[in-house]
Each structure stands twice: as structure tokens, then as C-alpha cells.
Image (cartoon, rainbow, N blue to C red; front, side):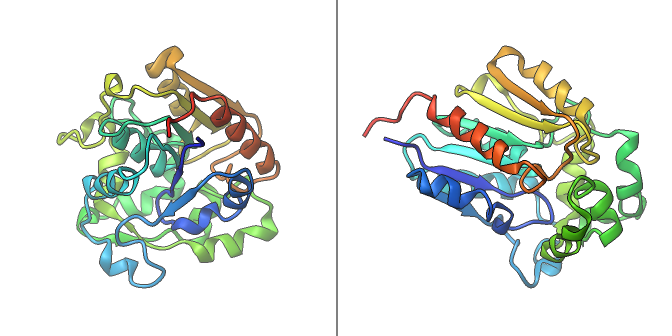
Length: 255
């Protein structure tokens, strides 16, 4: 029996970031569930996401995944970290991390990120409100390896994000509440991680540190010339095929 695939979007995003990937997996016979995190509605996210905590997102992922027998969690960016955090509480067939945010044990901030984030993190009280990326910030951080003619349409899909979540994820061990920390011993399933060496919001040095932290239990794959939008950059079909083959090789779920 093929496992159900649970798709988890990242920051400033909704379920529609997976629109290219979902038909491929459904055609292969997988049941696919592309969720929206709490407050990530098409309209009203600026108000709904102010002050929302990281644990709220984790709980939502757990609640979506629990009814399915040994599903696979597939997360992009923040969604990759949410998959790791949720996996501590679930019986899974596997976890797939695409351009994944780092667990709290790996410090995530790098100088290359600052031009796209400093405007927000320099403002007092970000944790109390939501925030959006400007078109320039999104192109710098997220879409830098996307064809220029496609960037404007992608930016229009972006919504607000919780400043509290950005703080919780962005400061690694300095998140004293520890809400971003993963107990890797509680992840008992195989893990696949995809990263781009030109990613500016999850720099490749961070991805490599995460791979080292997990060790041989993680299948880490790095793609030269690619950035944060492995979901839709040139050659995305090969990324989907790699994920599909990896999932197909997992131990099948029982009826």
C-alpha cells in the first residue's frame, strides 16, 4: 500500500506552492494532502498571523497527519522544519525536506540572508505582528534562481507570515523556549533532504550542517546552481522524480 503524502508549505506561502508537484504524485497513485498552515488564508493573513507561535503550526501538521497510516511528510523551507518537529510525535514512512529550515541545534543566520531580512528584523516588536516580503526581498531570498519572467507571478502568491515564528526559527539556540529544537532520536523514519547551493534564505552552509548533524541517517542531495525554489526552478521535474524514486524505495505500509 502506498503511503499518503502530506505536503507542508513554508513561510509566506500556501498549499498552492505544490501545484506543479501534486499532479505528478497523484498520477503515480499516491493520495496527496496539501495543507494550509493556520492563518494562511488567501485573504486576511496579515491579521490572522500576528503573534501566532511555531507550536501552533506543529500541532496542525500532527493533526492532519495522524489519521493516515504511516504517511510521508514533505515540507518546503519552514515546512521542512515542521516536518521534523511533527515527526517526533508520529509514526511515519519517511520525511522529505526541500530547502528546509534548520532545527534549533544548528544556527541558521548567515550574512547572505541579511539584505532580504534586515528591514524586518531591525524593527522592534516583530514578534507581535505579521510581515510580508517586498518583491525585491522575495526575488533576492527566494526566487533568485527562478526565471526572471516568472518572478512577479510568484510574488503575487505570497502572503503574510508570523513575526513570532520568524524569530523562533531564525535564531537557532537563542530561541530559549526551545520550540525549534528537534530530538533526532525520536525521528525513527528515513529522511531525504534536497538543497540548492545558491539558496540565500537557507544558505547551503546551513543545509550541510544539518546533514552533518543527522549523519548517515539522512540522504542529503545538493543541487548546483539552484536556489530556494526547488519547487519550480528549471529542472524541477528531476527533483520530483528523485523524491518519487526515494519514496517508492521505502518500506511499504501495511494494509
